[in-house]
Amino acid sequence: MANKHFIPYKIKMQVLKRDNFTCQKCGFFGATTDLEVHHIKPKISGGKDEVENLVTLCSICYYYAPESEKDFKIYLDEKIDGTLLDTFRKSQKLISKRTKTGMAKKFQEGNVITRAPLGYKIKDKKLIPAEHSYVVQEIYQDFLDNDISLTQLAKKYGLSVNGLKKVLTNYTYLGKIKFDGQIIQGKHHPLISSTLFNQVQEKLKRVLRK
Ligand SMILES: [Zn+2]
Image (cartoon, rainbow, N blue to C red; front, side):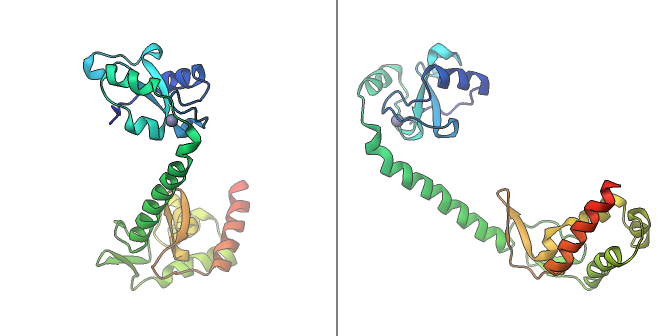
């Protein structure tokens, strides 16, 4: 098992460039995110985060790299054909994708939701419409139909201008959630139709540009 210590990005890049972004065991050529740098002399034995003490490995060769310097040198000398590992590379990606799907599912089930936006409340760790949920629709419609400034509108509903902007741009009201940088369908009830939501985004863009 490799020693997984944090290495400053700048040093990692220097090592990757020196090694031509190629795993020094199997010859795999990859992107920065597919490659790791391994300490030849482990940190526990006084090895430093220096370019001379680091070597580029792909994530698979990195995973199996022995800790000790002596064993590692033998390991590194035993070159293998990187294409033989391609099948593992694919399944490795699948595994991380599968884990993410599982997490997204949990997320959708509402396990991680800690704060309810205006119009919702949390019950049994799930997001459900609150008694006053109609107010969200009202704010959206009011903003769309009337020539009223954000400040006035915020005041009318007892919100700060920033709070109002958050309400007007919150995709939670579409029944969606943000997960892993993506917006995906959640399990909670939407409060706003996508047509109204999109119209409001358009108008909001125009208003904020002024
Ligand atoms: Zn490799």
